[in-house]
Length: 394
Image (cartoon, rainbow, N blue to C red; front, side):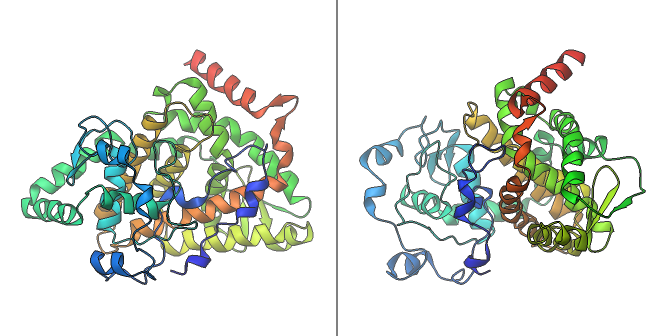
């Protein structure tokens, strides 16, 4: 995959002060980057001064980080609390999962700066390349991941036991229940002939209420402090709604289907001056979802990954949120393996939709700018009111 094709428009980050996560790149979803050097050994990668994966400057890994490698309580990679020794190094669940996923999927990354990014508890998701290289520098062993996988295969029945434990922590059945609970009941729709953005915004308005109900049904979400619940919903609401109507639109041709039953044609969107972003939704989301026949469980898991964004600004329970996201990854990967055994690349293909969703979500905010306020109420207050009122009523 060409690195340049990944939607990472830095100029979009200038859309500040509007609802949605507009200060983060798409890299925190861990999608695969270009695969041109997958077969090279790590020795060759590290010794090649021109290679994508050669080691970053040693200054990145200071004495404090090296000392952390010997601590049983601190992650040697990011400084978070370690959950144990993983692949030869004391590390947290987040760094453990990241390293395992990188090795098992044979992913390669590229740094967009100078291969010297700071990797700590707050910024460990910013650069996959530097995070992976720090894992190696601190002593994580690729062969340990491969040996672990081989042992699981040799156990046979034990493999089912280990994977089912992942689903028990983040049951895909509950994620599917959350999806189905907010799905519009009507299968009929009406064509929109003019003012598509008005219809889209009206649909989004009504869906914000349903979005809160959906989030509360996602496992572990309500365990978070109420302020963090608001933060996560404020950060991801635009991507969450776009993912829903994009998937809903796979059943129609050349348009999008809103939750209100309105069908917006491509031609109508172009006439209204929003054709460019509309085309991106159809090309990068709707057509890809239709092509791979993405099911509702997979959609729900992708939305849960968006929801549990540990890089959300002002988030307090960062570690917990990242752990919840890791659990979704594990459950989704298991689901793909069991439900689609003939498609070994399906899990990675699903994750590739997330960078496009992030980029489109940021661009849509430019058109939905008036969503900063709902009536005279800020979106933060709106979400807080809905969350607390629903908590009181339940």
